[in-house]
Image 1 (cartoon, rainbow, N blue to C red):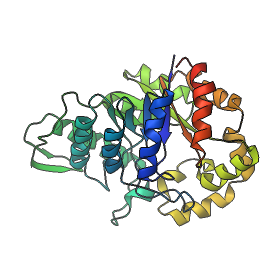
Image 2 (cartoon, rainbow, N blue to C red; image 1 turned 90 degrees about the vertical axis):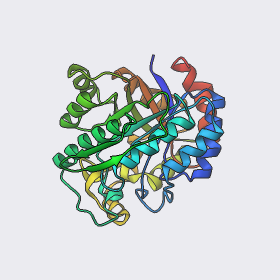
Image 3 (tube, one colour; image 1 turned 120 degrees about the vertical axis):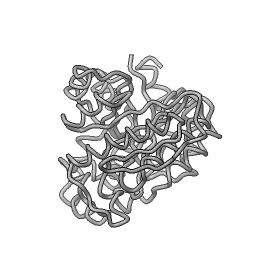
Image 4 (tube, helix red, strand yellow; image 1 turned 60 degrees about the horizontal axis):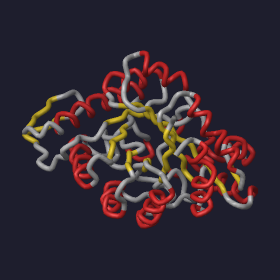
Length: 318
């Protein structure tokens, strides 16, 4: 039976708010959580974007059983992979056995901030594969140098390492990225009930847990929930590679003018009934995923937690 986790979207949740919500998640029976890692939100309405590594340090102090996974970190342009290796190792010492590093090729929205060019998808995949090699090298604890095509390391050593290294999962949204995940990762991450990607990952030798995620907006008034989902996450309706290539919040807001309220209402479980939430999760479970992470849109987390505790988690055999 798949495990159901909670997804904390830092794009609309401040660091202090996440530190309030995470212990509550433990109390109602969640065992695992995703937390996103962005420099910007997708739009101004979301309004947040705390530094995930600071938040994870706080989460280590306020939780005792909940396991966290970054969903996902880009260890390529904005932050050098050596620094990600150190950050992840430190978090793993603060929450032993409770942290996993999810990595992906990122978005121009978050990675362009120093004026670096945004590479095409093929180059980004090359960069990610090399970055993972650097991270694993640094996790050996040896004084190391590396002279790659994209990254250089000179006499670097991470001294503070956990007894158990965190699993490193790779996020993938296309066949070439899935192949890379199967080749270099400890597990696979994506968004949506993508059965064909998971089948490819397994057929090409990928092992470890598979993760996927979805967003819901639950609350007592369905129309209000639809309004909230449309106000906060219209970018969920953008097709193709737009999420990877648009460089600014303003560009996302312009692009989402093409997304209608009806499109979001059709694709997002909303309202007071647990049925659509259970049905949406079941699609991901039936696709074969080991872990499904659910994010609540908006601020009615008490309603979300009540529904998850009463109806959803028991349905999936908490």
